[in-house]
Image 1 (cartoon, rainbow, N blue to C red):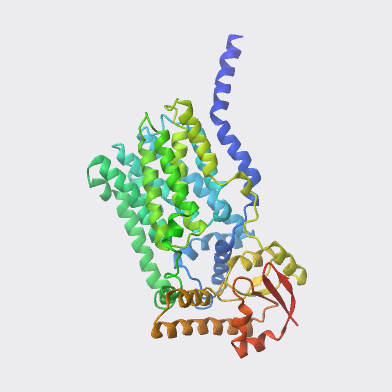
Image 2: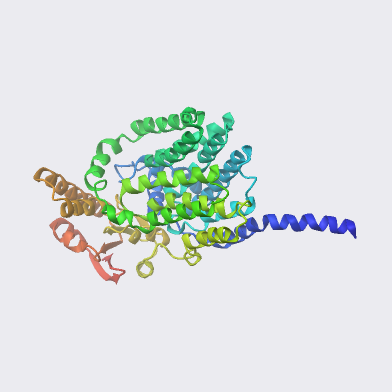
Length: 493
C-alpha cells in the first residue's frame, strides 16, 4: 500500500506541473493547422516562387520591402518545392520550430542565473508559447512575429547579465546571430534591444554589458547583410528606396491617432498592471527587461506611423510576456494581485474567438473568382493587398502582376492630397504614378491574365484606368462578371 502511494504521488505531482503545456499542445494541434498566412506573407511567398523561377527581384517583381523580407522566406519556399508540399505549411512549421528553439535557449539562459526558480515554469511556458502561437491571428508568420521570436534569446542573455551572469560563447554567438537577423529584417527594432539594454546598464551602473560578445556578433551579422544587399540587390538601393522615400515613408497617421491607439494603450495598461501586481515582491529582472523591450518597441511603432497590426505586435507581446511572468510568480500570494494579473492577461490578449477567424476576408470575392475558371492567371488593380493575396493562392491561381497592388499610386495620391507638395515634387509624384500605370500595361500585354480584379470601393480605380487610353483599350478585352466586396471582376473574352 505504501509503495503504491509513494509512486502515485510523484505521478500526480508531475501531472500538475505539465498540464499547462499539455493543454497548449492540444490547443495548438487543433488551431495551428487552420492558421492562414495572410496578405504580406502570402505575397512574399509569391515573390520567392518567382525568384526561384528565375525572375529578378526589384526588376521583374517589385517589392516595397528590403531584401531581408524576401530572403527570410526564400529557404522555406525552396524547401517546400523540394519536398512537394505547400509553402504555407513549411513556413508554419518553421515558426513553431523557431518558437521552440527560442524558448529553449531563453529558458536555459534564465535558468543559469536562477531567474526562473520563483516561477511556475510550465504555466509560464504555456502562456508565453500560447501567446505567440494562438494569439497572433493575422500577424502569424509576419516579420514582426518572427522578430519577437528572434529577440527573446538576446533579451534573456541581457537578463542573465543583469543578474551578474554571463552567457557561454556558443550562447552569445547564437543570440547575436538571431538579433542581427532581427534588425536586418527591420532595423527599427534595435530600439527594443536598446530599451532592454538600458535597464541592465542602469541596474549594474556599468557600460560593460553594452560591449558583450552577443552585441559584436549582432553588429557583424547586420554588417554582412548590408554587404549582401550591396552585392546582390543594389537595385533596391538606387531604384526602389527613392520611390519609398517619396510615396511610402512620408505617409503616416496623425500623432494623436497613434498615442490614443488601442495598441499603444494596451502597452501602457499592461505596463501599469505589471508594476501594480508586482508590489511587495519587487519587479524581477526578466520583467524589467521585457518591459524595457516593450517600451523600446513603441519607437518603431511611432517611427513607422502606420498603426498597422503587425507594427503593434512586438510592443504588445513583450508587455504581455512581462505580465505573464508576474502572473506565474509563486512568491505573489496576495489573492487580488494574482487574480488581477491573470484577468489582465485574459482581457489584454486577443479574445479566443479570433483564433479561428478568417483574417484574410473577401470570402465572397474569392468564391466568385473560383467559380469562373480553375487556376486562373490573375491581375489586381487596387490598393488593398488582401483582395489579391492570399486570394490568388487560395484559388490555386497564378499572380502575373509585377507589383502586389498599386502602392506607388495610392501613396503618391495620398501625399499629394495631404502635404501640398511643391511643383518639383508634384512632377516626381506624377511620374511615379505614370510608371506604375506603364508597369500594369506591360503586365497585361506580356502575361495576358484570365481574370482582372479592379477595386472600386474606397478609391475608384476604374477612374484611374480611364485616364489612360491604352489601358482602357486593353481592358476592353475583358467582360465584367460582377462586383463582390467592393471589387469588380473582369474575365477575358
